[in-house]
Length: 146
Image (cartoon, rainbow, N blue to C red; front, side):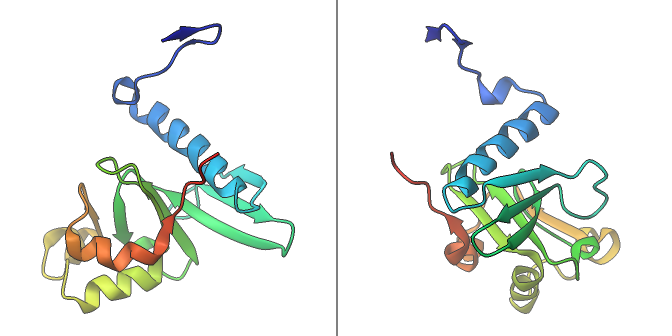
């Protein structure tokens, strides 16, 4: 539908960088509804936060790595990072503390013994398996209906 703003974008037709920018804008909007009114993009990201979110009511800061899917990585350990992603199948946003979820995943015996985890040091899931959806259940970002 065309408006004075032009046509709505088709997410699937966006480049990878455009999808990342779209997801960052959406995440900013979601977290603003929870009081995180300040959001900063980290341009020098290397195995750390892509974005910082600040809530002035209690000075809480979130360091967020924005991903296209659920992910864990050895390079993120000890950095107090949250991983945020949108489940493309359901449209549900998740944001979880990396180290806590990584430990749960490894305790369940997932990923270990694979080249991706043992040699490369990272793992991600293109779709959410039921067991991981259960692990991430408390880390859903509820979308407010206006």
